[in-house]
Length: 257
Image (cartoon, rainbow, N blue to C red; front, side, top):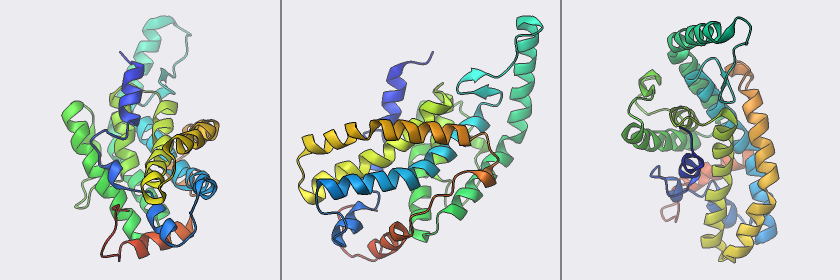
């Protein structure tokens, strides 16, 4: 049974997947003087949501789709003609067919997300976070189809693991995309409080003001997940890629990214 608590659990920054150690590029942006106050932090968050947020949410939703074939936003996509017995049969066939295709779909998603991540540092970070999230997922949902993820020496991108986790938890595709989009905001927002000494109440007010934008991004991402992997969103942020490479050279830094 799906409960709201599961949604809150996976969206919580305290979930043991290492998200609290990352600023989402904010530390480098602060050092470069591009983010210096509440207004510029809000602009940074809007830009992050429109790029990394949209792409990550779309790929998480696509992984959710691969894990739950025959479902659309958490509901079985079968017709009512012929009664419940026919619907059950069609639904079972879709699951079996999807199970056979799942490893290939996830491998293609991993390659496509790699292609959309220009920075080698950001690619490594995404896979590192994916490994951390996978450890938590295997402990909580051992029956989830994590074995269908591509076997790579460096791990799988975090959004794909998130999609499988959310499917295992019984969350819908939109809820999955919402968690992914929301995560791109909260990590950077929390880092802003620490890096700039901002009033945490005002930062939370900014997040509340962005709630509708976040929901809209998640809805767009969930719809995009119906497209083949090569047609998923590819919004880029070249400056964020440059900042990530510079940040990786620092000897002293507060956040891992």
